[in-house]
Length: 60
Image 1 (cartoon, rainbow, N blue to C red):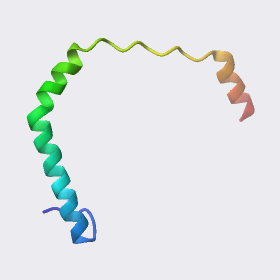
Image 2: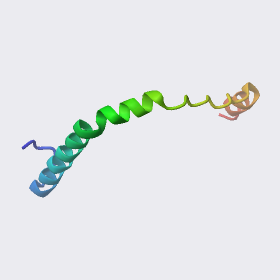
Image 3: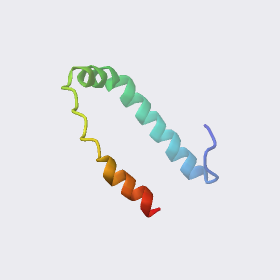
Image 4: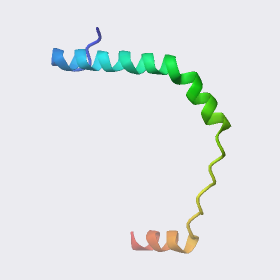
């Protein structure tokens, strides 16, 4: 067991959490990556106006 926290209870809980996350990633990781690759691309958000950015710089 690794020592991340000073309290042994917290270390045990942390190790259990890491074990569960590892098992989930091993079990479902490939499926999640495949779904992510086939998902529709996310559109880029509108870029903020340069006037608004310069007004924030002037305020500082």
